Length: 225
Image (cartoon, rainbow, N blue to C red):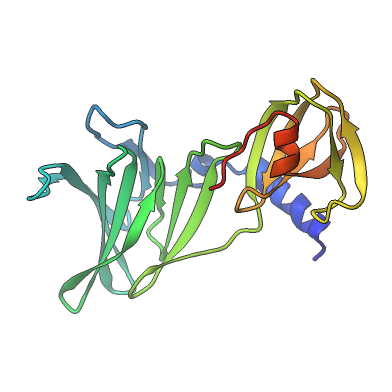
């Protein structure tokens, strides 16, 4: 499959499937958080394959609260989802698996939404200071969480350029597609993981790639992940 076909397929899927709509068969809860939490945290889960929990505990050393929020079975083992805030008051989900009567920590996930469909997979949404939300997929294994790599992150964010920049046919940046004048209101459609390359749509509907440095020249600042 060519990169153009991949991009078109990704755009179709991304624009028609929102995280809540994709998991419409799951229940949605807003998790209880301390007042200092910077985000509203959502959990999507199923009563058919697991049990929703709301048990609060406190760390012995720090006295900070954490919660057991959901438990379900994966390949015959019990999996527990814990929730707490990190030192910057952002949400952290800890995934633990009970193997041979021992509870093993598989990993931590960050984000403002965790979807637990009751399969070996978990899905998160991480808001970004940049121009896209990051939707991620993880597989639960015996010893860890394994992320499924993605070619792009969907953005669909509007920008207005303060200086003229070109956009290009691909990320080699050798074949220009168009020049976007100062004050152009364009749309960032996709971001390559790492925030190095961005697919831009012009008001006329043309598309082309711009690097992070090109966008910076146009007055659009994007941080590294």
